[in-house]
Image (tube, rainbow over all chains, first blue to last red; front, side):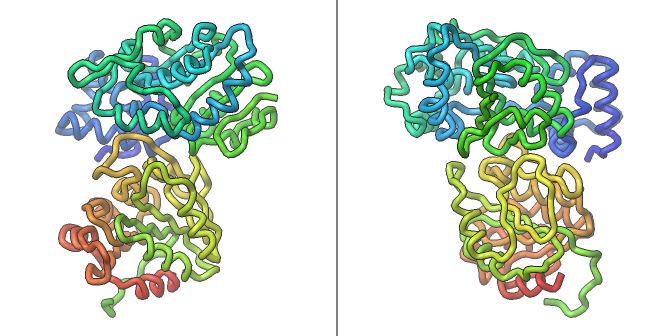
Length: 268
Length: 193
């Protein structure tokens, strides 16, 4: 088991050697991830683990990929998507051009879910979805729009619960154990690395989704990110978080009105 | 229950983990905890990911204590019942602050009882009482080991009283379990804290 002080040593190394800043990450989760990787890669000691990370930059890639959590699914929390479909999208539909930002999009399942919602509202051709993540490898996967076939039953059920009326399988082509989503979706997406810890606002958006990313940050870092989002949202634009995340600790919260029970806030 | 009870440090946290067949037991325990209990109570049960807040409502109605489904970075208050939200692992950021985690399932479960027990062992150490109830998988056993190593108290439901005895049985076989208790004994034990 890796100790608290050892986690701090790694955090220092990562910043000094590679410029990755994990200082504001929630320690409970980070320590679990570090221990998981330590066991997974069968290091005999912490010293060897640390040495590998400091001398082998290709191992850094693996470290960042494994430390950050990349578990996601399509139409996760179907009722949340139903609210987007019925209440949020109609309100941004009148804009001449729609800009959406998925911050911390991981392998893109939620980005494709959004594209499907926009398509069904006949808005996809005037929308642009910016999808960002700290981790270039997951973005590479997201860009391809290829997902495991084994997940489609669950995703199709989620889609129907979200109010979807189409045949979900009409959106993809299955090939062996994978499916590829229609190319037309990806043409409305821009994938780019962006680190919420240190990068700044890069555009103004009508809707920002950042779901199950902030749970890995401590409250000061969460506040930094809320300020970044606030600077990237027009009045009457929306911010959507994960189902157990909250703006309540943030200094900008007074400018926002929560949308019913869902974790969606509108800038006032 | 053994008579030669070791004097344990103040109990600040009682965690109750359960799976199949544990819901009735959880309800029974929670509805019988004394109002002025000084520990915080945390409930981690396996349930369907799509479930709404029904369980927290059920618990609220029956408990004289405030009941809350945990949100990210919530402060942990004494005398409050906290419920692990479905489809997240429940962790302790440090003493008195929760954290949530949406990483891979552990023992096919999210929330996993092992994950929460492990994290409690780190944050609360010997001030923890961990109780493992009825269930059909082996989640919780490793977590009880961690609680024991941190000098916390480990309790398993007496398998004879569990509708699915596999989970407490695994713990009794593989982890140091301080007490095997019936529901009534658990209630008495918690209320003595």
